[in-house]
Length: 51
Image (cartoon, rainbow, N blue to C red; front, side, top):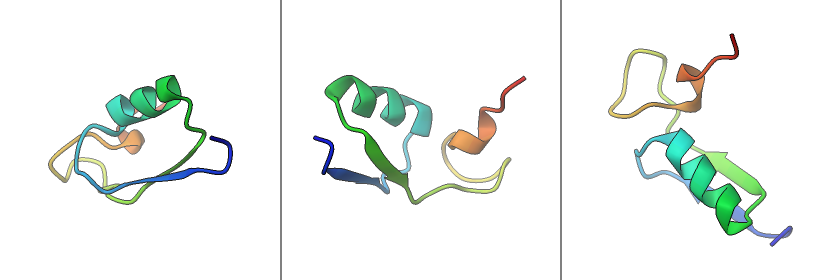
């Protein structure tokens, strides 16, 4: 699993996909469809800021 790269370009919630991938044991993830904040058809990781 440490050598597997998962590439997400599915226009789904990136937080949901992140949780699913980590639960399945994947470590190396790329999210291609990262829209600017306030645009796009789903929430990208940019929408989740540390407060």
